[in-house]
Structure formats: structure tokens, C-alpha cells
Length: 109
Length: 117
Image (tube, rainbow over the protein chains, first blue to last red):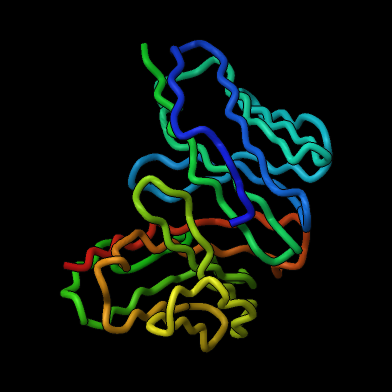
């Protein structure tokens, strides 16, 4: 729902930087979340953006442009353990979360 | 434990059987959400509780799906007459505040993997 789009799969090298993009419908927007999900495990919270700009948290940063309906998750100094799916989720009208299909990130040595 | 727990972790059902999936949210959390996650997809919203009140059930795919949270803590998702298309991971999430508050991180349980044969 709400056309939350993110790439299906990406591959990057250990130690590198990778950017995972997410686009969404802007009407009713109340916040955007990024989650990490390892195979067979529950999603875990990474970041939250509700205002335009960059939020930095250690090796992970998330950016939001509300007017463009666009966000990205930036992962620096990639580690093998970062291999996982990354889910973009948008809160609409304060009461409903819609998730993208997830981006599977493969980190290779 | 301090996290959200779900049981069973795995459930195999024959087509037509009824199943019940349990979620124990974090103590004191007001909001509880159920999601369905198909293989290779993101979670899809099923239903939302604020305490014991089911405020949104618009994501339930059919009237075979029923959820309850009678005392505002533990929740059960029941699926009647299961079909093969019901096979998925069912995730439960809870959050401290009601859903109408802007920032409201959800904490997810490990999920129940349902396989309908």
C-alpha cells in the first residue's frame, strides 16, 4: 500500500558505503522508519525521520525530503553482519504503518 | 523477558484447520499491531489495538481472520479454515504510546511461521 518503493537487492563490499533509497506517497505522511531484518528474525528499529534532513546514528544515517517523498538509509564502513534486509516503513494519518518490500543487502568480503 | 514474545514459533496446519497465534507484548505497551509477512516481502498491516479496543482491522484479508486483546495485554490472532495462501510469517509488534502520537517506535516479536499444507 501507499506505493512505498525500494530496490529489491543490492551488493556492496566490506568497508564500503551503501545508500538504500525509498520513495513513498506524500499525502498523509507522519514519519518514516527504517528497520533491519536478518533472515528468520524480527525487524529491529534503526532510525526515524519526520523532519527534512539527515539523522546520524553511528555508522547509519537516514535522510528525508518530505516534499519529494524520498528517503535514504546510508550505511558506512560496511561489515559482514550488515547483510540483511532493510525495510522502509511510513506512518500515515498517525495510525497506519505501510512497509516497503525490503532491500536485501549482500555484503561481500 | 523484556521483549515481545510470540508462540508458537512454527505452526503447520492442514488446509481447513483453525489456528490460534499468541502475542505477549512488552508490559505496559498501549498499542499492539499484527502484520503478515510473505516470503521476500515487507510486513503488511492486519490490525491494531489500543489497549483492549480494536481500532483498525482494515488489513484483515477475510472474515476467517479474527483478533482479540480482551484485557489489553496478550493478544490472539485466530485464523479459521486455513488456506494455503495464509502461509506466511505473522508478526506482532507493540509500542508504548497510542498510534496517534507521531513518534512511536514499534518493537517486533520473532514471529510465527505458519505453513498450511
